[in-house]
Image (cartoon, rainbow, N blue to C red; front, top):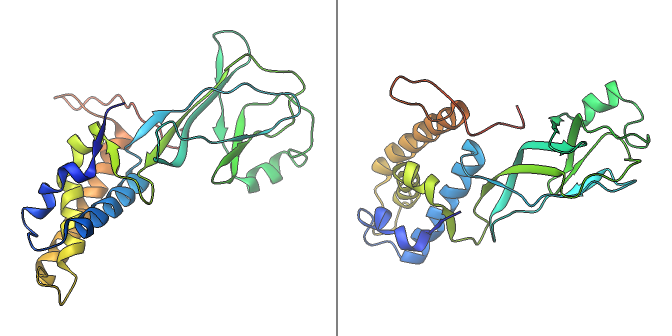
Length: 224
């Protein structure tokens, strides 16, 4: 998956906010990129496949891309028979407590559902009694740049760079008292960023359309 280095695209921000230090502009661009990806879930990638282990219901979420940070599991499936993966549905802990009261301790090869008890793990409602097919557990994550990350998915940047740059410019311009500040323009840009981010989330959730607006989505939210 090609990546874009945020430091290489700062010109989209600094062309207007010329007096801002590059390091500060990079920080603001990173912050907007993290926020944008968190809300829109536009950056997605397949994680490394796993194998279901006996008596192991909980598995670690591992980002497939360097410093990128997982946002959510978008799709998860388990192949219990060769070439027939079964998609798992995300459920809350409260739902599982109501519907499968002994889900934490029961012995069961049940991969219809999963839940996230922590940011870094996902859990099935039962302790497997049979080892799964090798690499039969597959899942896709939405991602965001890490707190110190400098890279973002090339496709996300190409599609939404104007929104991201507008968000970064907004945060710089509202820094009242700085030489580059223009609080009114910054407030306008901040509103434009919020609107652009909202439109991007809708676009991602519906999928990319052709000229007749027929939707086939490459993205899924929470496995739905």
